[in-house]
Length: 436
Image (cartoon, rainbow, N blue to C red; front, side):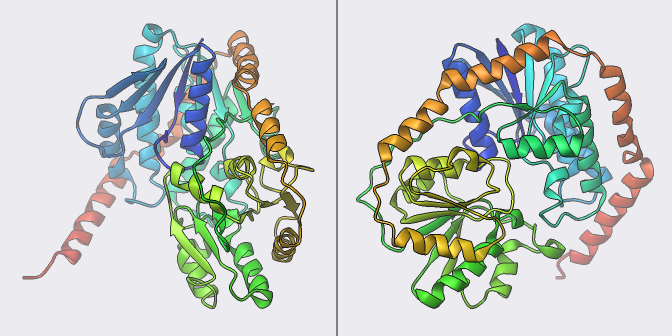
C-alpha cells in the first residue's frame, strides 16, 4: 500500500508531531509499504520542490507552490500571530501536488494532522480517503491554553471543524483522546497504538544527582504552573531541589503572554534557580539527558499522548506523570512510574518524596520488554492497516460538499481586506523607518 503523510512538520524538526510521523513512516516502510511525506518549505524561497527518497520513504518538500500561495494569502491577514495564511497555503499546495501526482505514485490513502485543518483541502473526488490524526487541535486546546479570538484563530478552528466533519476517518492514540474527540465531535473515533521506535540506549556514566527534568513545549496545558507550585513545596523540605524544563516557548499564558515571561514574573522566587528553562534540544540530546536524570516529570493538565513518558520508562528513569498524560494508560502498575491526579502540585511533590524513599528495583528488562512488545512494528502497522482498508472500502465521495464549505474563505480574500492590510503595513513601515 502507498500512504501519503501530509504534515506541517517532519523529522528532524523538533517536537512530538515530527517524531510521530517519522516513527509512522519508518514502521510502515519496515513492513513493506511505500510512504510519501508532503511538507512545506518554511524558508518560503522561490525554488523547485525537493524530493528525497530513502528506504521506501519519499519526502517531498513543497517550495514553489507553497511559496506562491503564502506570498499571495498573507496580503489578506495581519502578519504573524497564528499565521492562518500559512496553513491555507499549505493546504492548497498539498492539494495541487496530490491531484497532479496521485496516479503516478498510486497513492491509496492520505494521513494528516488535526491542528490547522489541512484535511479539508484534500477532500477531492480525484484523491483517496483522508484519515485525520488526533494530536491536539485548537478546538481542544482552547479549553486549556489562552487562544486569542481573531481572524487567524477563527479561520483555523473552522478549518479544523470541516476537516473533522469531512474526514473519512479520525484516529486517536490514547483512550483519553478517543473519548475526548468523540464527545466534542459527536462521532465515532478509531483507536490505534501510536507509532514508536524504542530509542537506542545512549552511553551514560550513570544518574546525575539532582537532575530532574520535564521535556515538553512550554505550553500552559502542559502544566508549568502546576510544576512551579510543586517546586515551591519541594524546596521547603529540600532547598537545593532543582528542575530543568526542556522545550520551546509559546504564547499560551493568560492574555497571550509568553509562558516563560509569565513564570519569570509569577514565580520569581524560584525561576532561574530552582526552576530553569533550557529551551528546545535535539532528540538525541534529550535522550541523553533523560538517561542521566534522577527523576522525570510530566505535570500536564491534558494531553493526547506523550512520547517522553515512553522514553523515560524505557531508559529506567523514575517517572512521575499525571492521569491526563494520554499515554498514562500504558503505565498503570508499572515499576518506577507514579501516576498522580492532574492539577495537584501537592501530589507531584509527594510522589517525588515517595521515589526518594523507594528502594525497590526498577525491573528494567520487564519494562523494556512490555514496551517493545506493545510497540512492535507489526502491531503498529496492523492497527493502521485495518483502518486504512476500511476507509478505502467505504470511501465517500462528498468532495463537492467539502469544496462548497471551503467557500467561507472567500470572506477573507476580499480587495478591501487586501487594501486595508497593505495600508497598515505601509503606515507601520513609515513609523518604524529609521531617522538619519
